[in-house]
Length: 359
Image 1 (cartoon, rainbow, N blue to C red):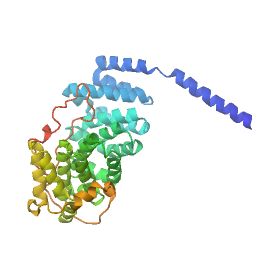
Image 2: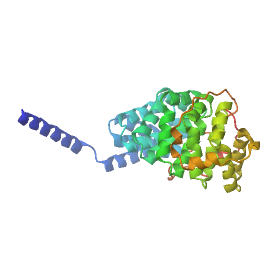
Image 3: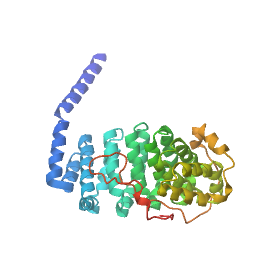
Image 4: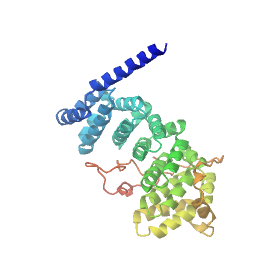
């Protein structure tokens, strides 16, 4: 009857209100975790997150506190990455349990990316437990949250670096198409395009993923980013490197990318960033792959891309051949959001002693 339904609804509301009243205030959780971090360190924070896996506030605040500790001390990072602690499983459970909570997704993914930085064992274990799929889910569940997307880019870069398996997992989870959709969403953000280009060039450091990006419009997405953000040195450097890695997957991919206007875009970038030796070095490396003698007589591809930002989803059925000489610049430091303790420095310092080669 309607009266019984109303009574049941009222009881449900009363239960939720009681549940809310019984929840520990957020300020209390904040203070408790600060005290735990100071007295118990990494182990204390991990225990606190394990004891309150159903409380999203403990998860994101705990992840943020852990990240602060590992950035301050490499020994803390080693403790956090201790295989016996299974931190990667804890973090992935948080991401799965609170898929729509942007605070959980942002801070946990940020910690995941920081732990994967320079740590082959952690990235392998995290990949085996489903980290790549969780990142793609976060990308699609928060399509308009630039902060979450930036952290996803960094984590993808660090998980894909030196890991053919995680790159393959990215393809299996339909990562390419989903990633390119987000690139189109934030096409006006130089910061995001810079991080996304870095992620693509690392993911494209093996033939399977480089072909997948090129065949599904990744070349157009990168060229559009380079055209739209001509004054951003990071977009130009990482973008040309990404195009280079895609082109190295085979002669047909090389021809395809050249037809899109890659040579012309790189030459334009050389004119704008001629005083930046790191950018110039990468642009010249890309041009040497594209064939430096072909000239820039045709402006057609460049001009058409300026008026067509939907090319990032175009598809090609071309097939490529293996080429062992593509490369990745390495892991990303957490550059997406500045905060106290971040080892920022020069965002391109990682590249100074690296040559193009498969990782």
